[in-house]
Image 1 (tube, rainbow, N blue to C red):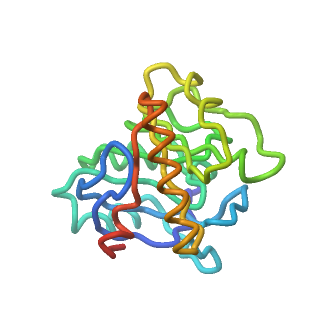
Image 2 (cartoon, rainbow, N blue to C red):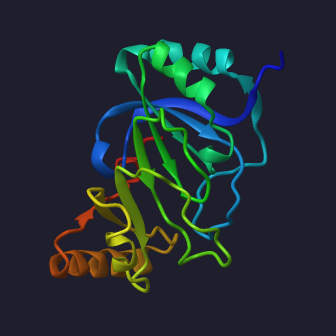
Length: 200
């Protein structure tokens, strides 16, 4: 029987910097590769390590006491499967995933963060998620977040100012985001706090 392998960019222990679980200690499993090419992506996918579920469990085990793992990327839904999620559950982890929503996510994933990218990339496939716990929209001052507000009933709604790499532009975007939320209070602000406090 073939053993599944996953292209892993890195595994590390830090604090969740975004969304509902901001500030929570988490083990991050970053998968390599994505089906989109967003200009603001901050992940280098040129190198990766092929790992089995057993390898991943061994890598996350030193931090098992935090019991929270975030599957991220890249686009983790291109690789994450039921056996991996079940193995993480058996090891005692609550499993969260951030996805662009263009591929289905295993139902066993505990927390699904949908971060749509169709405003930034042409020809994005239709949203393929059956369940969403939170929607995190990257806000650049140009898009209309309301297009996503009613797609997933009951999902928490977050706007995250886009990090353009330009400090002046970023400051303008943050102010626009704050003003937008004040006018549309069903949205909440999500800052990339890990960048603000300079942790991985």
